[in-house]
Image 1 (cartoon, rainbow, N blue to C red):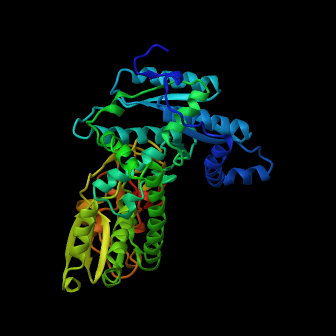
Image 2 (cartoon, rainbow, N blue to C red):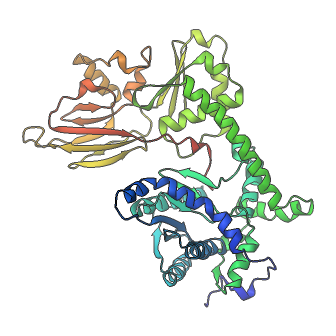
Image 3 (cartoon, rainbow, N blue to C red):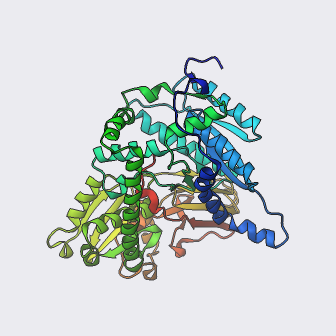
Length: 484
């Protein structure tokens, strides 16, 4: 292969040993368990006489040594153990380097030789130079998730390894992260509707390269991995210094695993409180006794605030701890139980009313209106799957076509319904009535200038033969974990 950025297996000076089949079988085994758990319904279908389908699994492969070794070794694992898994390969061309197209094509050839489907996903949106790496990472996971959904894959395998974990721990230490951040990357991590799997976290990069060298397989080197413009590259240059003091990547990765245990234990305490004390309110809003919340330790309170944000707004990333600390201090203010207070963090309103803390989506935050064209199913801000069926538009309005919009109810919608004598039913609350903002944030379907359907407000449903179904999506409490 003629390319200045290619490192051939013969040129790799590493003396590390290739990974053995036994090591790989042990490292990859949790992926099979995850696939079986997600696709257990297929086993039930097989018991009823329907042939069991193979389990789909998507691998993210860029062309670098890490991901190429992931593809090759994962394929060998499936073939060696005759597993009922269909592997799909996807490469992302961020359109940041002209060489990326050749790298994606090379991955496609490697996949084709092994009988695996390959797709190149292109990020062709406008780029910002202020946080290019962050935007590229977000776009990469979005494109991979969308492709996984199109294939029916619930899991995406990522090639993060032991050295990546060590770098991540040090980067977060520099940034002043707490326990959750210092726990770094998990072997399994929720990412929207899919789960990321990282089977190579126990192995250093040198052994991945050695595994490719043993098979005479080439890979590409991304020049940006040598650029001191990026924090990860600068931190990587410090690893040899730490290693001289006995703190190598293996020890740093072990520290991250211990912190993951501590983080899980703290999350279990917080989630136990969540289940016992936090009440569900209309439109995915929440409420909790302020006294009960204040009685918890600071660490548990901060975790509860993150969990509530994750449920209410389906945030992809948690807010910085400094913002949560400021909010927590405000919620612990003297005499607050007798007052009314309102704060906004990460698109959530935190409002104290009647000695309870109410948490709901900020009504005016990123107000989204979706024009609906015919019977359809749409995703509403990661919170609901909305299905529209039955008579539509002109049929509903007696022949005159009227725009049908999916949007927050808003103050205008709430006022309009109030004038019509439609008050929100008392039984819709867990206890006492909550703030007006909760109602104004409710997703609603408008037609002919009036809300025809409003989530959790059954009295508003006035049009016959026109059906709207709001299916609530599961809360993603793993939004506490930042993607790398």
